Length: 454
Image (cartoon, rainbow, N blue to C red):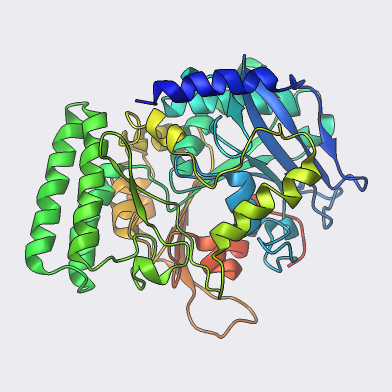
C-alpha cells in the first residue's frame, strides 16, 4: 500500500548515507544522556535516547527503575513527542519541565517502529506490518543495549505506552519474557503500563456513540448511525478483514466529526479546531481518513507542532550529530501507519491475558476526557479478560486519588488486585502525563516502586 516511488526514492537517498555501527553510542560529558542507532535488521535502523536521572538512588533495597516509553500513532515519534511534550527533562521550548518523569526513573525513548522519527529504513519494504514484527525489532534493540551493560541490567525495565503504543507494549512484554527465559536477553522486566491504549478497537468504536450521546455531542439519530457503523466494523474484525475494518474506522471517525461539529477525539471538552495541534484529517491514496496525533497545548503564535518540528530538525539534530543529513524528522509517519493498516484493528486482549497469567505486573490508566480510547471502551475490554483474578478485581471498591499541593479535590481513582492495577484519571484526555502531570507522577512512582523521595 506504500507508494512504489517512495521505495525508489529511499533506495537512492540512502546510497549517500554513511553506514551506522549498531554498537556505537554517543552522549553528554556528564554521562546523564546517551543515544545511538541500533541496526535491528539489515538496513533497518532504530534510534534510541537514554536519560540517566540526576536523582538516581543506586543503593537500598529497591533498585532504581528504567522506563521505556512507546508512542502511538502508529508512526508517532517517542523521541520527539513523548520526550519534549510529555515526560522528558525539557519541553518543546527547551525549558526544564517540572513534571519530568526523571524524578522517579531513568528514561529510554525510541523512535519505533523503524521509519518513525529519526529511525529509518533503507527501503520501504523493510517497514513492519504487524505488532509482532515491531516487538521483534524492539527486542533486538534491548539486546544490543542491555546484554553488554551490567549497569543497565541492575535497573528493572518498565514498559510504558500511550495510545497505539499499548499494542506494541503488550507484544513486546511477551517477547521480552521469552527472550529473558531463553537467556537471549539480560534484563529484569518490572512491568507493563498501558495508558489510553488501543488494545481492543472493537470495544472503542462501540463506546463512541453512547458516550457522545450522553455528552450531547451526538443526537440520538447520529448515535444510532455510529452504532450501526461500529457493528459493521465488528463483523469485519470477526471475519479477519482487518484492512477493511481500518477503512471503516476512518469512515466512522469522519462521520462522528461531521455529526458532532468536530469534537476533538482526544478531549471531548474541545472542538478539534480549538487545539492548535488539532487533529486535522488527511487522506491517503485509498481514501483512508487519518488523524494526526493531537495534543492539548495552549499557546499564542505558532503551534507547538511547528515548534517541535523546528527543534527536532534544528538544534536537537545538531546536538545529536549522528542523524543522517537526509533524514527529516516528522511528528508522524503516514508510511508507517499505512504499513500497519492491516494490523491496526487487531485486538491485543489475549496478550494482556497472557502477561497477567505469567505474573507480569500490568497497569492500565485512562483519561476521563478521552474519546478515541475512551474509558468506557477500556472497561469493556478488561471485562473480556480470562484472567482468574478478574472477578475479585472487579468487586473491589476504588480508592480515590489526590495530589499534594494541587487545588484540591478528587483527581482520580485506583483499583488493584494481585498483578492488575487500574488508574482512572479525572480531567485528563488522551495524553495523561500532559493533562494531569501530578497523577501521572504518582502512578509512575507506585508502578515502578521508585526509591526516589517525592
